[in-house]
Length: 540
Image 1 (cartoon, rainbow, N blue to C red):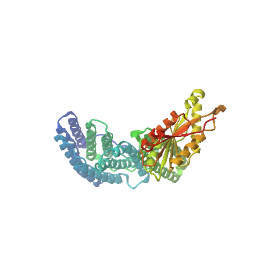
Image 2: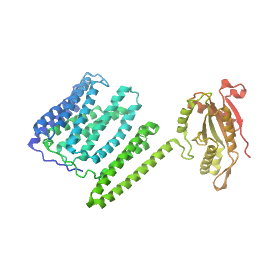
Image 3: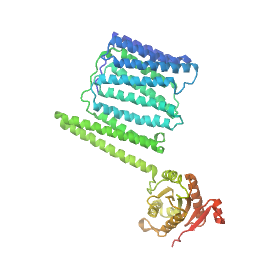
Image 4: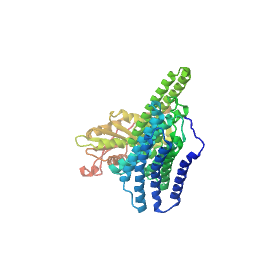
């Protein structure tokens, strides 16, 4: 951490103090006034920043004028946008979106970024990869939160392309400003009051933006004054930074930037673990949105890569310090072990999350969610030339096994049934457990005749008894409902028809397969019921 140099207030700082007091009075007026004219006060505050910077540059003569000129140039369109927004509020008219104000705001943010980049190069000196990597990790960590709470909800909204692009541009520009702020904080050594005010301006601005865009994206209701006051406070901090006499002082670059203190290391690792925690907590329904999971995983992979590069810089620095080589090497190994363990836990967690989301925890078969996903893919392209089949299976008398031998024996039986079913089908076929003792089998590229052979083979597989723990032999049969699909069909329709056939197989005496046929295709009285039956072998 850099040293903070805060001199006692003096008469020279009277202008900065007076500016801050006047701005505070404006904010208080905004809060206590109910008139619509109060919405123009935000434009007054942002416009005052332009004059504050000009006065501060002339009065204090900073080492480099260019960054402050760019910041003043940025606040001019920002104040213009505030004025446009305020006028709409005064008139009680909805602000067009996207409109002229949005272009002015985005243009202002680009100029702010340019001014901050120039200031960062002046403050931190030469390009330093260690500080840039740390700033990149922090930015990606914040980007994960931005995606989960702002960008992803926007993408799921019904906004048209152009408003959506402008809505996403705001948080993206905020991430750019955050990356520059992180670099300033991590690479600067001695921090003057003016420097701290600049950092405070950035943090308050980003917090107000994040609060506003986050609530807009998620539809959360908060008082509109909260974000507005945040923006006004941030503007006052920037103006005070220019008026403070310490703006004339040169800040020093932090020494030994390659060092990675444990506290910073902990923060960086916490940022890496943020993505898995978001998925695990199912923030915004992330587990139900595969795109969200993929984006978060990609961000976490990038974070891991940056952190690995950061560790490489740390190791190189340790080797270059002869007098501290042993101590630095030990710390580097400790950090590397912690990182490796963290990465292994993250990879295992990602693997478990992916598997648990799509597979049955008891049998390891596909679950209903994965079956529906596969049904969408397969049934959508079915035709007479490329048919498919869906089987619904229900064990006959499974409840008796649970009642007589206990639920552990029932679970063991379900696992054995899953293994037998898997052994009787092709690798490309999908066997799924839908819950309880109900299973499903999706076979692609088979006609009705072949589907009949499938049912016979499955019924035959139940001929031999199941051997459970403690030598218990259990004779079990199954009833099957089959549906041959020769046209594009909705998954819900196919499941319903197969379930109808399964019901018919159950009511007809169990241990058999019933085939669903649409009534209009049937000619016999049995076919008019919508089901054709195939008897299974009798158990001995």
